[in-house]
Image 1 (cartoon, rainbow, N blue to C red):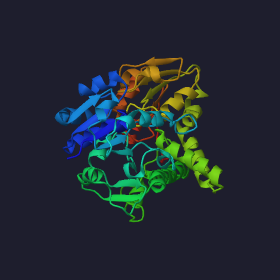
Image 2 (cartoon, helix red, strand yellow; image 1 turned 90 degrees about the vertical axis):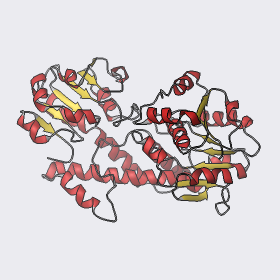
Image 3 (cartoon, one colour; image 1 turned 30 degrees about the horizontal axis):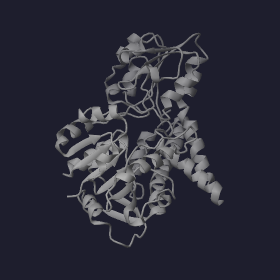
Image 4 (cartoon, rainbow, N blue to C red; image 1 turned 45 degrees about the horizontal axis):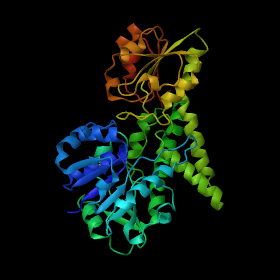
Length: 420
């Protein structure tokens, strides 16, 4: 069996390496950060992902980690697999990716294949100074909070190559076949754009749900009654992104929209639809701030706002484009009590932020509660405990984690997305 290497041990690389080992391949993980490598050797990853520590421990006999790129020399296939950072405008910062490729390629064997796994804009892979017969791009389908599932049981592989009609090299083909899913070969630019196309479809679903959920709130409809009907439509499907939320977050979707707008500017393509999607996301992100402004901020002197959740979604430590972080930044000098089971309160951009020890501690003396991240443990909160702890009665629960009737029965003014 071929030996598989992964260069870059951030979220994408760690989960991908663990999945490779779970399929029985000898797997080598490289990262220049020696402290990160030490934690991986101890099966203690630096990222939060359900099931990942257990997977690393179970398959540790197949895994090795190193902070020296020379360790990749025995590999038949080396994936370039770090997370790609984005700036505040959603643009990918690629200098680090190119530097990583430059540091790795001198240590590759003469027949070793290099596969860019991290997301890059169309044209990146073709620009690399590596023979086309050894240069490939693979679309990553990482989902924060479900990365182990996505890495170990992929739906399909999309492979960018110089000649899609030609069979893939044996080492790469053997590795991909082991996952028992379809393998779609296409030209480099098609594969790079395929990832963006997937995310655009997700953005469209999210935007439809957010737009019509807001309308539901204003006309007396209930979006949770409508979504099941859409899931039963074969043209939409049971797995469609129809749950309303607080706009786009996490970085990847925003990056793809920014890439499309940049390409549109360069090529003269019409992208007003994409600009509308970006604007809609920003509007929906500020839902909690609008409700707080109407119910608390303009009515109470020196109010206290309890905020549960800082991560942009559950089961991750990432706060990239988090609606909660945006809310806290907008609250200015308003006092806030914050709790997240993974992210420390020090990540909050807020000068008057109290780091609470628990969910209920965050609610102590609060005039309003905003549940900004749908962590599963927040479902267990008893509304009666909230009523006893809070000074006020306003509860914002955009993801409908709590029972609305129970909240109202406890005397709370309950607000959620998609319901008037």
